[in-house]
Image (spheres, one colour):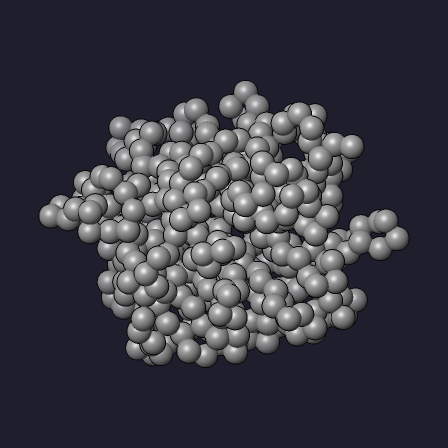
Length: 400
């Protein structure tokens, strides 16, 4: 694996090629890039959430479904644009709000929960991570930290920047963040486009020390990541990847990937999609056999996002060791898919075994009543699920 300095990878110098790739026509939003002329007047478009969080008594609990023997309840409401979930050592649940440019804390005291803003004025703070009492926040172009965050929830200090100069591209620019078994931070820089030939600094997973030093490339050829977690025994990094748009409604599918050769694995973008077919523009002369195959496919345009391995048995022995994966749901398909939480079982060697829906009902009559983003196993064995459409966090547990 090659170590690199920010200057060497050009984080502070935007190449002419990258500029050309990310510039969009003034009358065309980035999400329309690659849209076939035949459907240019289609009503398919990204789905905006309601302007305000849904009140707790209006949340769609009656529509959300889990298997018999489980129940769903509201863990917290009034968390605008609830995205990434993280748990502090003292029981605080932290929630990023990417569109709101804030990070919230859900504090439980005397049986009641309170939602507090602990960081604001940020820029696209999607990824958050916790390690030894320190909260790490990944914004669009920088990573910062707040030490001893749970001791300062009432008057949190401003975040201290530890790494800056990251690309500022809005398309796929928001970061996901996790701490590895090696006590280093892992994050991605996605493609600044639907489909393009990326610059050397894009479409990669990076890792860096907790002090922001020692940046290096961990994996290549990745379009967009919004979820990562570490296999509990193999200690390999698994991640969700959203594939390109506008080839068709049914392909390519989103992927679940894993890194087995750190620094060497290339997952195909922009040449190969879903592990088995080449891009009509960029794949000429390339073969999908050149690239790392996915663990499994998880549906066309399903927007696979947050994921966590579940190592408890609070949900029953059948779910011990499964990977829970939230699918935000499609926007560029006539018939929507996703909008659920999957339970994915793997073999002992980390390969795919089976997959089934665990939590469903976010799509009703081809419309969204909620959109799951991330999952978080809790010490009591329950599972939290964030919903950025309603600004809420749900709790799934066994029915008593």
